[in-house]
Image (cartoon, rainbow, N blue to C red; front, side):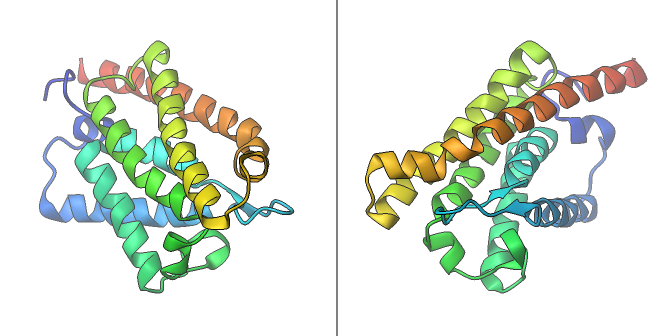
Length: 194
């Protein structure tokens, strides 16, 4: 398998089957669900701080566009169907069409783009991984803020204050974690493959 177009998952498991891909999706849904439970409410905001964005950054870049997007789509569908896997054990369609829906849709779109960029090796070096992670977060928060603004009907000052400002420090930390851990993992993998 060429490192030029492979993801971390492809490099570690080059002979994936339908069964192994299904297990990766199930494992990814469990991982996202666990990180969603790391949730801190923000006073005055309907959007909690969660670990989901870190999960998206790590999974999408490790899995690639197709498997990463599929995993997040299955996560959304399971939550809509009634599995208590969204933040604080919540579930249901109202999470996807309500105030937090834009963030979830943004995570789905970011999964696709981050996976695509990872397939182009942008997760393998610090200089490209960190901007990739930043772009993923910009997508998530763009969808989230536009949706939150539209859903609540509040002004942009409130929307930024409730839907972005409290998240900045945590998101910088998540970008740093994902943007540095993946290149380190890649160095290890490349040594093993060589």
